[in-house]
Amino acid sequence: MRLEITRSLGIQGWGHLDPVLLAALATRSPVLLVGPHGTAKSLLIERIAGALGLSMRHYNASLLNYDDLVGIPVPEEDNDSLRFITTPSSIWGAEFVFFDEISRCRPDLQNKMFPIIHERRIAGIALEKLQHRWSAMNPPAPDDLDTNSGNQQVTYYLGSEPLDPALADRFPFVVGVPDWKQLSKEDRRRLVSWKEPNGEHSHMPPDDATFLPELVDRCAELIPDLQDKLDEWLSDYIVLVVDLLEKAQLPQSPRRARMLAQSVVAVHAARLVLEGEQSELEDSAEIALGFGLPQTAADVPPSQATVVAVHKQAWEIASLMEDNTWRQILEEPDQVQRVILADELEFNDSDISRLITQALGAQNSEARRVGLGAVMFLAYRERRNLTPAAWEPLAQFSARLMEARAMTTFVRPGADMTTWQEIKDWMMNQDKEEGTLVRLERNFVLNGFPEMWRRENWREALERFRADLIVFNIEEGIK
Image (cartoon, rainbow, N blue to C red; front, side, top):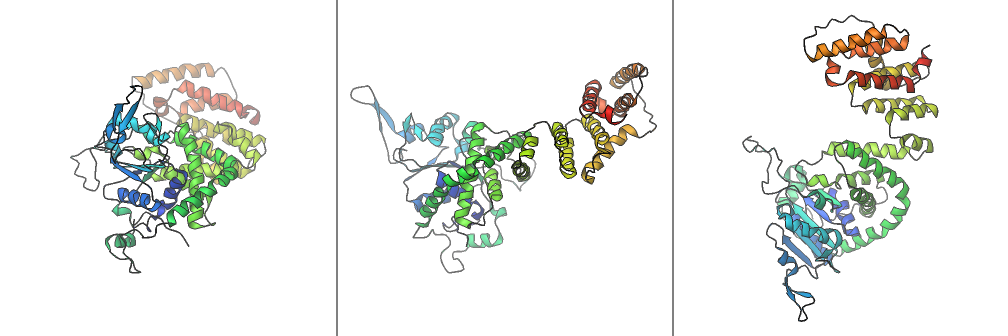
């Protein structure tokens, strides 16, 4: 039976976030909640602090002054030190701190929050009792916002600014919270109803809230053993994730990489507590990644499809790396070299096919894809029984270089004419030589004129094509 945290606290529609919230509590990791107004961000935090029996300070960061946190500094009688005249709202002695509206906070005060959130210090003094540091914000408005577009479907918060990237990077969990559109019909009914189906009030937290400290303790106890058990595999997975996020224009800091590794373990421990032994590590890793990127606090958050695709690719590769030969392949950063190495290691046709399609897909240059596809077709047409998914692009690219066809192109004065004159001069020298490779090079150059050479330098593309012919030993293969 699945245990529920948020619903037990009277918060509806947040059940999918229970493992993340429990993981954060068990590891005492800072949490940043991002969502529209009225989605129960503040209410949840207040009820969690109450359920844990912790002394809480709730600050509205948009109105906050530094003196509100530390009090008024006055010199001691000896004038060698300072003491603070505090108020009940001062941070000293707090066990749970909540900074609301953090994206509306003045930049100078945001800087003063760094040590509180990351180190549990203020003015260089350790906050010995402080355990949890949580914050909340509304989604920032995009830079290119058109307020006259007439789009009434989206609420923009013009006073909410993207969080300083360095501050956002101090939050291991950056959690987008659900609004009305994302709630199920049943959750909506519970939200507006005063009573649950069992007759209990739905808007009030339970009188006996001792269940939450027990769950936190159980989760914390599981984490050390899971860290030891998953360390080697998780290291491979996180390295792959961070590299793939970089390619997806979502770069992460080294700090974030370590945070993600810790978060995967913590979320999995939380799911074992809440859902039982049937919890799959793969799902835990996806959850931790989905709620662990600082870009969620930016004006354009990452798409869920992108994050899921990164996770699935990293998971597949990390799983393959348990095999020593696959590890040797996947530790090679160059996708083309992976194909060559796998062929030398006598990988089966299916695995070679997968690596070929990955190598072609990794190329940003159309000219490189065309040339590489033709080269690999020649290299493996007689030696490998590749899958249709690999043969199809190889056949298409090679046909562009090997099928005879007539072409008529009107060349206008300008850049195209200059390029054509360079190609003509080059072909005149080529006519003095013979052989299959010479014809392939000539066909490669002619195939790209004029469209491809408007975007790419034909001489540089030709040099890459020649290099691919050499590394795949094409001259030897077609004699």
